[in-house]
Length: 189
Length: 95
Image (cartoon, rainbow over the protein chains, first blue to last red):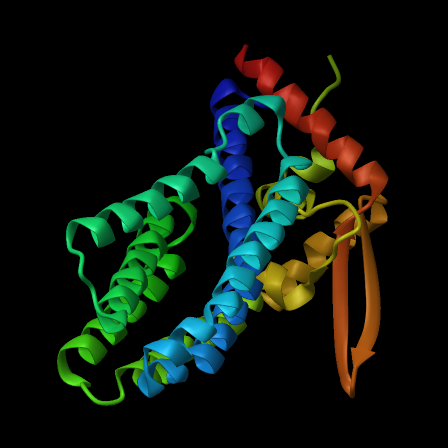
């Protein structure tokens, strides 16, 4: 059997494409529990926002638990994924902690710049930042994340602009539902 | 330098082994998912999986989920080694 340099290059391209595809599917599957968890948190906690500021503040521990849970799941996934990578690929991996810190600080900076914000404004800001993060993740890790971001962004804007009395319940059901539905679909990727 | 692995180098089998090699050790891929990833037909899948199984490169586990039959596939330890040798050969050709 003779393999030319062109055959070898084409075969290595096929192998690389298979690796990228499998990595994308793995990202979808590993992000799915995070999406489902946030969907449940939004579904349970956000309707309290329609009852008043005090009730909304009382749900803060759930959101803090969500941030901690996301970090734990994300870290476990990244460690598992790192075992599959070559040292060069590992070195080229983005620093997710730095990326998340940048997103968090940007959100805080925007909130400070536009303060005072109502709980509704603050919630919409965080939801739109989340939508942007998922939209951006799509460019890196697979287009389905961009679809999640787009749905979340549209759901948030519709709620913010047109649903005045039950905004938080809208966000819980529609955007929480988008998270849960996307998570369930991506889990099967 | 080892020569090329004739079982692996065929285009569909190369994509098959590359896809299975990307799974973490101990994980298996369902037949239907592998078929969808490769865009292959049932007949093609059976032929090429048969060749890889005959060479000892893949392991197939058949069971039932409820009443539905399920076939899961993984690269054997020998299959992973053979794939890595073949990739090393291809890279050496380009160096």
